Length: 266
Image (cartoon, rainbow, N blue to C red; front, side):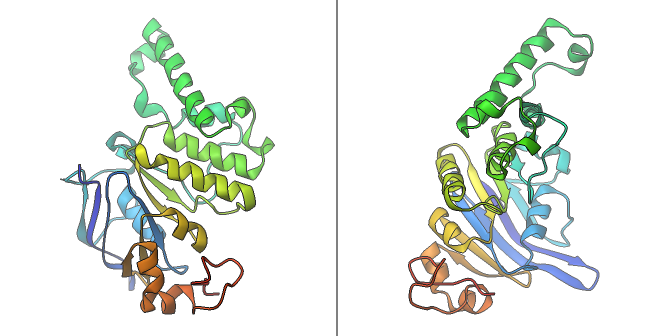
């Protein structure tokens, strides 16, 4: 099982090069952070992996095989993604939202569900149990029958993550999982993602630099569509190209830095 391999991927939108020969990997059980200034190409790379954007060059591999798919096939391949913000259905309960992510776990066919056959009933109960288990794992099972707009933002973030996790993915792609969080919610989200190491790989995009540095095993840095650095958090922080492109200059113990080593460039 070789995980996700992105090799030499390039994407152009007209005369704009969004990605230029980007290569990275996410090994099984690894947490990889993808960082870079706004417009660096992070979301474009996510969209290439998910099948929303077509690449002009390069290859994708998943578990040692070429990755060629439509977005609707992603979950069946064992890959799940969250989106920027929440993407929750406001007129559906928390439980119903999470159930929408459990379709790949369904065993009963369309005919069974259409005619209300016993197998369909059993399958529905099993899916509800899976959804409740995902909510319980994130500490929000008691909110199952409430609506998203009735909940604090931090709880809604957990619901969105539960919806991705209920599909039992082997690769979880998180688009700004910490955005809008602060204090205890930020620390809790880091703990939740860290605990996923034993069950799946994680590729995440995030702007909270100290949070990313403390959480990830490896970090890849994009700037103007090019991969300018990859390595451990310590290696990335020490790279002068990263300092110039994104993280700013070293100062003594600034507020919001990680061990006084880097600050985010304004």
